[in-house]
Image (cartoon, rainbow, N blue to C red):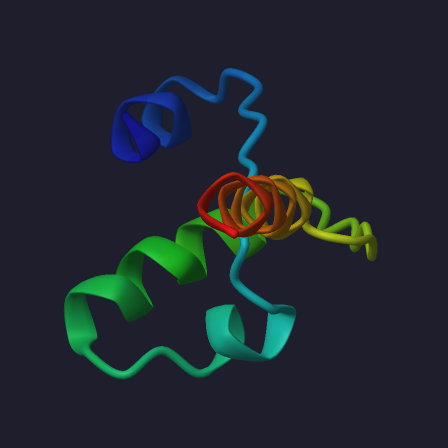
Amino acid sequence: IVDSRYRSRKPLIVTTNLTLDEIRHPQDTPHARIYDRLLEICVPISCIGVSFRKETAQEKLERMKRLIG
């Protein structure tokens, strides 16, 4: 998908939980190539916030503790 959008010069919106540092310094060559293209055609925007998945998991854990006793 990334390559297709890149070659056709069409817009691309990407969301990830990777940090910008992880994107700029990938651990292997295939990811490095993909991230390089993404950084060329996309503008990184960092959105910092609380993980709603962690909050949901914590709520479920608390509910289970109350049920079990």
